[in-house]
View (cartoon, rainbow, N blue to C red):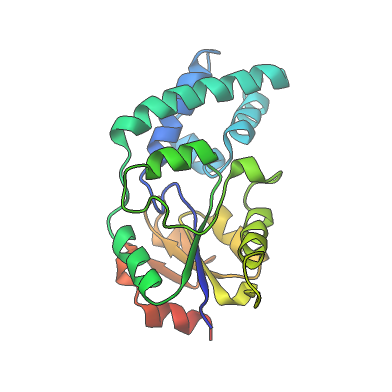
Length: 227
């Protein structure tokens, strides 16, 4: 039975992947490193800010200390906040999809590799502000996707508020990358992919359903996944 839908955020709820890339690369350029967009999408998309910078530090032989990497994370956040204030938008079809879920009594939550600050900033002033029962961000976990830690934590938080606990098989996850879909599968949850970031051919192997817009899905489609 369908009880909850858990959303990734960047590339699923908000069109913010390109903003994260621009802000991260701006920070990396202060150290003389320029990561091409196709390389970022292929290797680092879905990482938390620190994990992304740590991976680039390793792959590009930058030799930065943990403190220096944290400094780049702080600078990236400053750049991102400025960009997000003027450029970020909720992706078409998401608001209608969330309304459909709430009208049918389905719990909605977020599990994202973005920081809590980034997520709150992008939701502020939109119709989705306050819509999600819980938001698990990069600040809440020690392992990023494809590890299932984040999705398991979402379920734990949701169940802390309920007498009758939700089961993982009663949850549908919406993701835009194979890392997130792998994390959802490892957490025992059903998987929908949306082609905002990758092509359907790149996602179909990991998802039970692939769509180009979330408002293409009906409540019956989601219930069928959880039978």
